[in-house]
Length: 248
Image 1 (cartoon, rainbow, N blue to C red):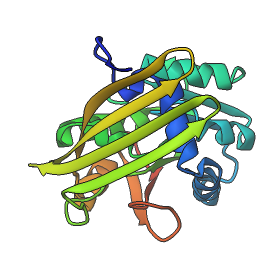
Image 2: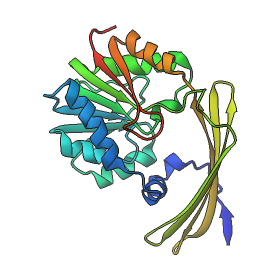
Image 3: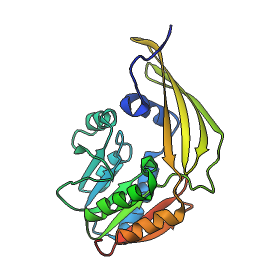
Image 4: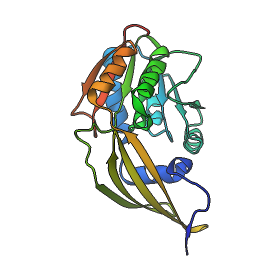
């Protein structure tokens, strides 16, 4: 029997389901991390401490922890942190908002991947986020940020779908994305089937900011960092890589 979930559940509340979807769709966290690490070491070869902002369930953090002596993550969603902490017991994972976090220490590199920055709203929040990252860098530290789509290469009306089976759980996901002003708005429906709980359905809507390349670059510079947009090495919209030169 198909049951709509009575409580207000979004995908970030159910980290196990989130993990099952993206691992089942073949997201290559290891390869992506290798690209990120290469750019960090090209700019700060002695880098030893890294912070993953918006770390989610720890898909990239797992491999960052293999590459650097010290790795930590922060995420706003409890459902994501729970999975990351369970899967990475030796890696600190903190509750934190990328717009204004205080870790009490500095890092040689800070990364923000899987388009997590798209969850921000307006250039003011983008500025606050880059400034918070820059404040946590050691001199010459590196920021690596994966953007969401730019306004000019976003595809309105896109429909996506997948069905995956992970262990005894099967998850179907369908989505439809439209543009509303400076945001993409993705409506996603999930059907989750498990032997112990039967079949349930929930949905959520993800508004994601369509910042321009120039807006990202300006935010890096206002935070006291140089910035390069790297394409051709990383799926999606590439990476922004910045190096701290001065604190704002």
